[in-house]
Length: 178
Image (cartoon, rainbow, N blue to C red; front, side, top):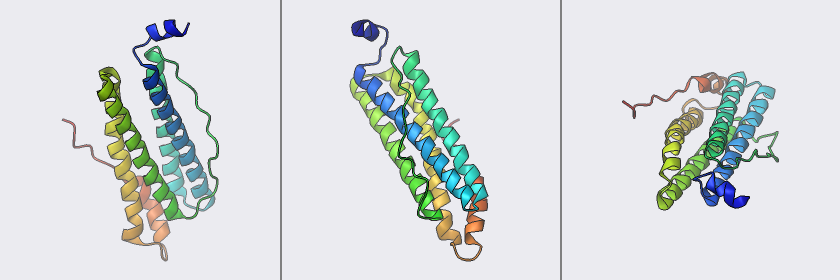
């Protein structure tokens, strides 16, 4: 039966596993952002709570795109389990530091997958990954700009309130496309 499954897909077993690992990474990112949203909500950072909820939704969408691709290619997409998601975080700023670290890790992971596609001549998957690679430009940019607000505004006085209000307004203009 395993041989028949391989005939139904152009994905190698290794690529299928790599993509399932990325599906799990996206699910974990979604859960982490949702936990960050909850922490912000409990601590009175309403705007940032909404921002992190939106980020959670986006990561889940990314997970589902990957899941569908693996399934569409005849592979076995695995619904991941997520555990050990923190409920508490050190600080308001610390959440944004974690968010940036998470986005950089996701970018690095997609880069490794793209590199593997090139090495194994899996140009179909490489083409599919282009959307994610472009998306990571925006994801890192917004996370970096949000963290920079802490330096620009400072946390003293009404600083955290000002930062909280500005976070959802950060946007990235994609000037790379025609």
